[in-house]
Length: 251
View 1 (spheres, rainbow, N blue to C red):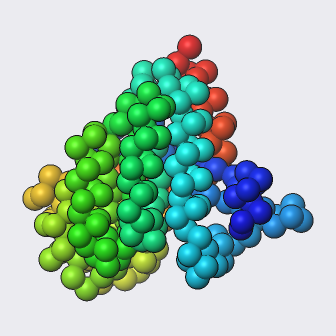
View 2: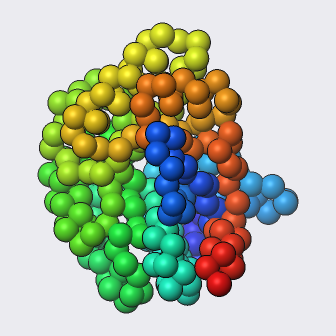
């Protein structure tokens, strides 16, 4: 991992997020990180992050992702702004606990000249709850700058709804465990329906990840979920290719 950080050997991919209940005209993507295994394949993402968390390397990885993503977006900033494109980046709980990390993000945004509204930061519900005070300050500060904030893996915790009112977020990303089996499991369906209902009352948008089939798409549409992400929508491709397409369509 350290070698990949030092030599820029990580790869950034982007997966599309699309509207369900309403057609969105602006491109929306989640930025994903991949690491090659040196033999032409990729290391399993869960194994990568498990090792990084164990050795307290997630803040370094998060800084790399934020810095590289913003630099790539800044290179085509006029097209990003013209299309009102949004790119979401995941942040770890370890980074939320890093007192210098918030300032690092602010400096990267200031130096890039990108509109803050083109950036979304995804924080898992568990990370936010375990770093409650710092998470609140982090979310409030970036929200005031105009960045979007998404609470990821929402619904996984037992106190999800109780903590939700503490965070000024824009979007709830429903925990993928409820989406994967939603067409066969009535409990998962009920949980998604409840999350969607609460989100609408709070004027928050909802995103369903792991939308892999037409059946899942149809059901979450009926339940009122706002956005979908998954292989049924589009598989991850390189961030460079997404930005190239963005530039071409804006010409």
